[in-house]
Length: 362
Ligand SMILES: Cc1cc2nc3c(=O)[nH]c(=O)nc-3n(C[C@H](O)[C@H](O)[C@H](O)COP(=O)(O)OP(=O)(O)OC[C@H]3O[C@@H](n4cnc5c(N)ncnc54)[C@H](O)[C@@H]3O)c2cc1C
Image (cartoon, rainbow, N blue to C red):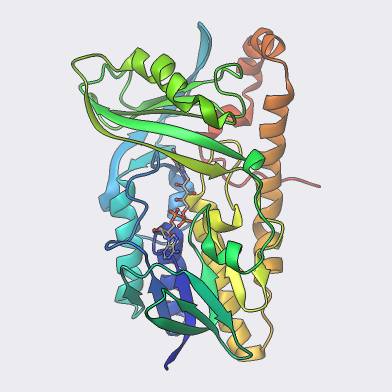
């Protein structure tokens, strides 16, 4: 049986970027994707900081649907605006972007096996074997880019990301919406309505928007949908898609076990302020690729340390902001909101801003 240098489980954004970087470094790569097409199937708001997107090295321009210059931040009836005179974020066609990431990997010579749902693994001294029950694929290193419910993590004994460290998000994309301003995002900070997170309206065009929220209370999704989304969606609106999905808010305690690595949502490489995971996950996937290259040359695999050295303090800073926002009682937050508007708390800027890489001293 042939052995690839790298086997990647999951061909969405992070899997595609990891595969492309690996193939660019001259490694033989096999991606395994459970669906008949790669990608997260639009289950994402698809708003990314422009700076973060530029850092990925993917030709994302054809997938851009809208450019965002600012945001209106609401707390109940109160609000303030933040705006810059240049594009701070882009709204993308997430499915097209995922397919672009994978296509670029294929262009560099990576292989993609579609309809390949990995269901078991076997670790030998020289390789890891992934199987869908019918076919086996072998790699010298295996990288799990298989999302928040990662089977790679589960079946290989990685520490769990507890459910309490996740939020569940609902989002719909609707046409014929009365969009307030087509180049500004609306963010709704309301800890009572959305414990652990917030609500949003992201314009895709002058008449189309992605409207959603996330909460720690997983059972509240349908009630909140009725109460929040319905405010913006009248009878004339057309629903283009609706979905709910988990967002991890904590980094997995361990992301490398022997020759098995995790990247992206599988590793919890997500900004806990906003749930954004494409930029950090993609950049960590690039580090995974260079770590594998180094491993094959020197026998030393240091992915865990390499990505944590570069990005862990930023992710920890996002987590601290998230924890701070959620620790302030709702009534206190409400009365402080005016002050926050003057202070420009970074958490408020993140959903639309270019603040992926917050630096923390500890
Ligand atoms: C509502 C919502 C809004 C979001 N908005 C944003 C945003 O605006 N900006 C942002 O940056 N991030 C956002 N995120 C987060 C972002 O979607 C994730 O961080 C990102 O998708 C992670 O990419 P990934 O490649 O690690 O995992 P995923 O995109 O989840 O991809 C995992 C891949 O693995 C495949 N797979 C899974 N199991 C198997 C298996 N057993 N065998 C084979 N293949 C398998 C899946 O089919 C899929 O293709 C949002 C998330 C949600 C839920």
